[in-house]
Image (cartoon, rainbow, N blue to C red; front, side, top):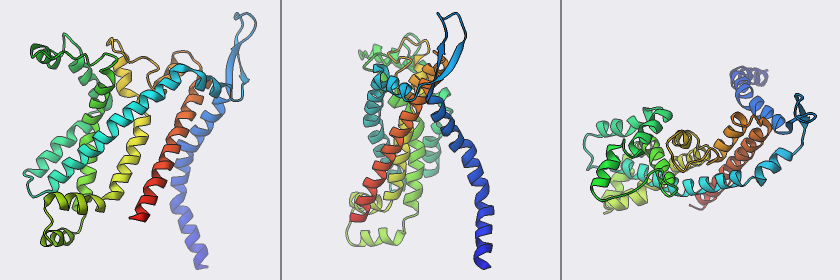
Length: 297
């Protein structure tokens, strides 16, 4: 009787979550998978209407066979290799600095570093596009007057420019996560390390960082997933700025262009599913790798 009552209570409490999860996650993913198995073809010589026909895995092979789609993953790889280490190291360094005894005005710097994250991504991208555009940007003018010529919108400058925007948006947010984890460390552990003769650097690297390992793994996992969804910043740079960012620069932009530029919803759904599978696979690898290292530690 007691077990049945507990089961009923759990079902009542978890029911709303599973209903919402089904509506916003399971059904959209299922619809995307179903949509990716069909394509629209014109009948006759193109003068008739279009009809939806079952195409099986043709949309997936078309996406994988498209050079633009594959190159988008290459861009994502370069972005991740450039952005993720800078974000993790920078956010952790700032958090350790704020947690140290040398820090002053901690609340002010926390707020100042977190404020860029409060700016919507599209607004942040527009601000930086202004700062990147020659003849408009005071930053570019100052660099040119100092003899520094760098085109932020060129093929070589587009990726670092987008990484800079993402760092500006997310560095403070992740710093707050690391700082909160550092504040949760038992102070007696740090005091014991100091008594044993550990300096500030040794305490930070050998005591604090291992103790917030779970937060580091969580931020790394979420950052990888978020990096694969890169869309807003390159989309803004693509809109009339003369940058090297094309409409298919990332897989997300490829799917967006296929859906709303070419009205090929089957191809857009297939490319989105392939991107989701890549994110799931990377998440699994990161989780397994960090889990094994945690057991060894």
